[in-house]
Amino acid sequence: MDAQEINFENLPKAVAHLVNEIAEIKSIVEKRQVPAIPTKKIPIDISEACKLIGKAKPTIYTLVRERKIPCYKNGKKLYFFEDELLEWISKGKKKTLLEIESEALKYHNRNR
Image (tube, rainbow, N blue to C red; front, side, top):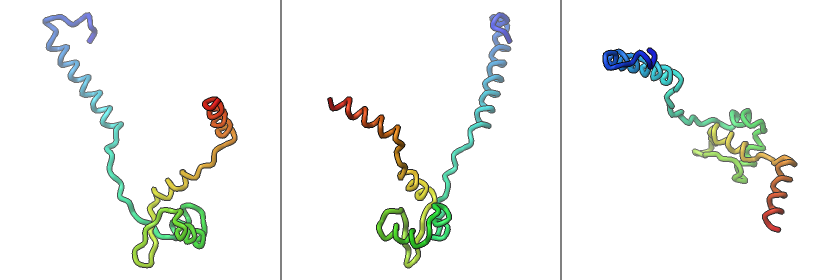
């Protein structure tokens, strides 16, 4: 329906048309948005942790002993959560030379 067709007599038709358009837009938006379902945190054992981060069991045990890796202990068994291990890996990012140079320039310019 064009804006030129809207007048007092056509007002109910125009409102009905707008209601239909809004319903279509709402259905499109609802289809694209997947409701956020909280994921369950399922613990993994040391062998799965080894596969995930690509390290040997003795290395993992050393990291646990030095408290460098996030883990949980129940009895004699170690447990890990995948999301925590991936976050731990991402925190260990090494800066590139370009990033170091830009930080040095910012520091130098600030402290003149």
